[in-house]
Image 1 (cartoon, helix red, strand yellow):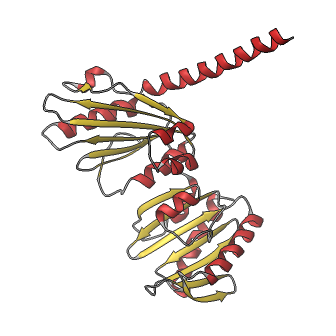
Image 2 (tube, one colour; image 1 turned 90 degrees about the vertical axis):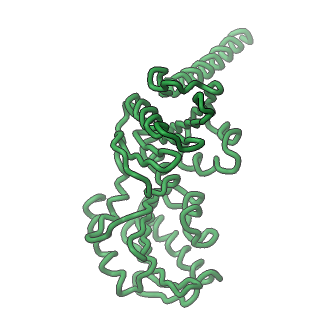
Length: 305
């Protein structure tokens, strides 16, 4: 009996090891082939980190990746004869939305858009790319002639190997507001990500399933989505109470289907619930925010019938 149990235990350990090895080999296969690198060579061997091992790689920043749904990352460094360096990171997330979220959280969207597949932006020294369930960052030590072309070739070769196509989360289209040129779009899956975007105060807004935010002009919009209407009612009531008493905000005004507060700069925050969502418009008073909220509600009814 003990022998059978021991054999079964060995089998479980072997299967777990095999799954980990397979996952590692799978993501390593996304690294660029030698014919793409030209005169760039690997400085150190590629390293792979899985699940909570990410803490060994990112000091102090792993929590938000795990909140979104992190699976593994492969990182590799390259050098050329001129002693320039390229640092490549490929993050594989648990699903497409998680990868999109990490991409939005890391990217400023102020770079030059690149047509690589998915979403991609080129900055002075690095490129950010989202495709499928992967977020890719490729960074140069310094600018030099031809190095940007190398970055593009490397990222393109990785994108071409990713078979999963990405689709922007449905909640983002709630912010498809007529005449609004959105910027700084952020997709969030929890409190850590939200606090990286805007801190409404400890615990003021919590327990949402997903959220989206974007700026347009001097205004800033947030949409928080809950499992159902009941959860939303509970947490909206909690947010209302905490925002009322929080020292960060003043001039609380309760309205029949929402409330407003002001921050220390005198900017108005308008909050309104609808179905399993609640919306926030920053920089608009209650009356001004109504046309924006109405468009959001129309989008909610269309996207979540």
